[in-house]
Length: 378
Ligand code: G3I
Image (cartoon, rainbow, N blue to C red; front, side, top):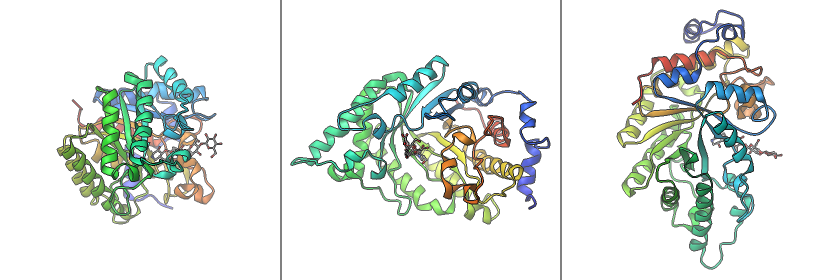
């Protein structure tokens, strides 16, 4: 297979002439946090338990070296923190945050509520809310948000309060076990932010979702804008939009030869920022699906997808944070997702900036290039 023009340009731009893994290893250079930090952008990584992640000293060291901050990938989700009604378990999250504090890394939270029932704790989905279901649901929601936000307090500078409340298929708000008891999704979402704010006057409060630039996400983007407008109109205490940024594959966009659909993405970002919201890139990784199986070409394709996305997105000074959702291929959730990566061909996915042996890949160079090209933040 041959490289297309964009991939070839990306290859040249990233200096990918040396054999795989050698280039960056031989070139210590500045770290992601140093280059991004000069422009006022915070770099972070999601940390999860397991032998390839938090239990791996090399991976912990890589995170501390390249990042300003960490977020727990799973340990601060409701099913982990409150696995049974009224029973809280902060062990996994406390361990990750204690390490982060020791390393001088800032800390953020994900996510107080994940709207879809399939990500809620099973006990909540099956719960009998009794004779006064609204009151009981409010009590449960307040108990969870109060207990969690009071436990962590000001130690976390930012929280995803609500995750994925918009249905990408329709752009409407999703129903859940809580929205059905609490007067509908908008009322319930507003309630979540107010509960969080009551305990966290200084923390950045974020609505987090995965709408992207692709043509197929038109309804999703419109739905998120509608929600942000509605929350603004209600005076909901929300500071930022979290854009997950699981980048590509953009078959609809790439098939059309590139950049035109980014016009729609710019319009989306214009509208979000015009409403006064800050933006957090909260879960960055790049799908390697539909790219050549050859490792070098695949890595260049991943780097090019990232660069296309970041050149437009980081142009907005309101983007204050850039969080990777795992920063080595073996530590990224897509490695387990057969249908969403090269795993469909029986190949291990290559979706992050660092290889399985933690050596840098062309994506890391693409990130550095995007950080160098972006305007400085306030
Ligand atoms: O830890 C348990 C283990 O004890 C058990 O034996 C095993 C059996 O399935 O499951 C393990 O938990 C899994 C956990 O990851 C840790 O590996 C869960 O089943 C699995 O559902 C969970 O997946 C996470 C997923 O969210 C659901 O919480 C992924 O790691 C995580 O990357 C993913 O992250 C989400 C963001 O929160 C929101 N945006 C999308 C993103 C990707 O889906």
